Every structure is written in structure tokens, then in C-alpha cells.
Amino acid sequence: MASTDTEPRDAEPRPPAPVGAPDPLSIADRELRSRVLLGTGGFRSLDVLAAAVEESGTELVTVALRRIDPSQRGSIVDVLDGAGVALLPNTAGCFTARDAVLTARLAREAFETDWVKLEVIGDDRTLLPDAPALLEAAEELVDDGFTVLPYTNDDPVLARRLEDVGCAAVMPAGSPIGSGQGLLNPYNLRLIRERAGVPVILDAGVGTASDAALAMELGCDAILCATAISRAEDPVAMARAIRLATEAGRLAHRAGRIPRRLYAQASTPEDGRGEF
Amino acid sequence: MKVLVNGDETELAEGATVQAAVEALELPAAGRGVAVAVDAEVVPRTEWHAHTLEDGARIEVLRAIQGG
Image (cartoon, rainbow over all chains, first blue to last red; front, side):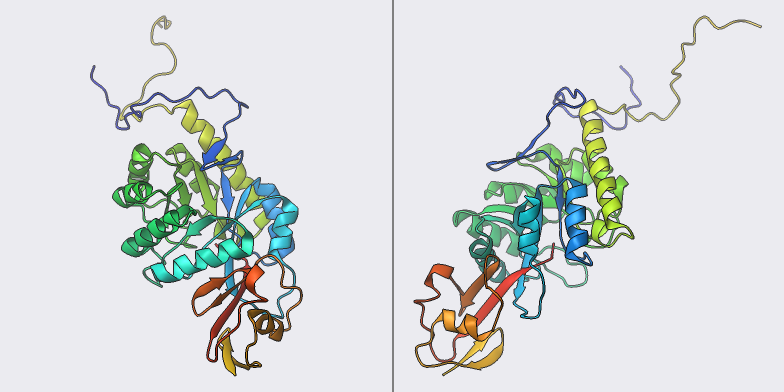
């Protein structure tokens, strides 16, 4: 049958999508109801962070480790514990596999979790990952018993390699961290999703709600965003917008979108028109 | 003896422990969310009292901040 379909449907049929049915996300041994992971960087206060956590519906929230500052007031750990969310320590700022592995081990000690958002940065202007060092660190941490969620390039081959060494998910960048440029290569994200056997979490680049919806429509299993919420004019409202967009995009993905066509296809029957 | 605590040269008694180095920072309660490395190796909290420092040791005391 001739077709103008430029966006073939996935080979595998989608599961049914009854509205309101549970649709949990499984990562390693954890089941999450929310498909929003929240990064905590950039919030102007812990109070705003706490409100955004609640409004986003997130159950998994990143934290970082830095040299202790005795003048620092308030504890982010207390705030997040109070919100009842799980912590996902990151290795932000690490430029070598060695530093990232040591930071992950310190985070395990500090937060009593073996989950880690693994970042190994290769360039300080784009903050894009250093692929060989990322793979090396991922392998070492998996061997050491960590549940590794790597921040990766939108490279389908690298995503596959990370899965092969035992990562529990892959987290491709939509665009550089904090850039708010959205999804610069949706095609690659689709390829990553189609081939991955672990959850794909769109990490970095979300600028506003529609970016989160698009990521989910492409088939991503979750999104992680920080800056889009924390530096929005109204972070709490944006947290809600991104929560709703993520839910909408997920539901649209499960519902199965129509193919794109070059020409119109009448939605009203042609037959039986009056003749005047 | 002299050690480096978060990059700052710090005078500690001979045979001082990691616990002493952490206390020298005069922190409010160093509870959950704090971790220590000595010469690029993690020292678990349960060993802070027992782990003695060598002259010139490099101690990093890290805590949770917003990030990611």
C-alpha cells in the first residue's frame, strides 16, 4: 500500500493507554510514579526548591558535593528528606574518570545510596560528556556495586555501550546543560530509545514545558531538568507546567500519534454531499 | 604536624584523627550529607575516630549542596 507516512510507527505495538491507569517507571530495583527527575541547582532558596519539588511531583532529586562551607545555612538534605524524595547524587564538575569515581564513592558515604548520576565532563564551554572517560567511570562504578545513571551525549552507539557495561539507565543530553535549547537532535533520541533496553531519561536542555512533552512523545521514559524550573521567573509554576507536559507527552506516546502526511486527509466523509 | 583541610594548611597534633580534622572546621553538626576523603581515598564516618593522619595529609571534607 502506498503511503505518505514519513514517520513510521515503532515495530513493536504500544501497550494500551487507559487514562488514569498506573504507568510506573522502573529503574533498577526502584519503581517511580513520577517521570520527572528534578535537579536542584539554581534555586534561589531552599523554600522555593521545596515548593518546586512538591509541584513537580518528582520522587528522585539530584544533589551535589562540594567543599564544606561553615557559613552555609540550612541543609538541602533535611529539606529533601522532609519532602520524602530519594536522593540522586551527581558527579558534576568532574573532568576525569578518577575524580568522578571518587566523588561517587564519597556520595555513597554521605547519602547512604549507591545510586549516582554520573557526569564526566569533557569541555568547560559546552559541558558535554567526555565519552571515553564516561564509559571507563561507568564500568568501574558498576563493578563497585553502584546503580549508575550516566549523563551522556545523544549518541546511540555510546548509549548502547553504557548499557552494555551495566548502567541502569542512559541520560542523553537534549542540548547543553543550562542552555534551554530543547532537543537539538530528536532523530538521535529516537534511535537511542528504539535500541535501549534500559530507561532513557532526557537530561539537559529542557527550556520549557513543550521540550519535556516532545521528549516524552519521542518515547523517552522520563526527563531530568533543573535550570528550566529553577531559573524560570516563577519556578513553582514551571515545575507544575513541566509535570503536566511530561504526563501529557507520555500519554500521547502511549496513545500512538497519527503519521505525518504531505497532503490533507479529510476528516469529514466525502460521500453524500448535497449537490447544488 | 601540618595537613591540608579543603586546601587550607591546618596545624594538628601528632597522631590526630580525621575526627579532629573535621572538628577543626568548627562546623555545626556534621551529619548526613557530609563525606571525607584523605589522600583521595574515602574514609567512612565510622572510621573518623580511628583513622590517624600523617603529616602532609590532604583531607577533603565535602557536604551536600544544590546541583545537577
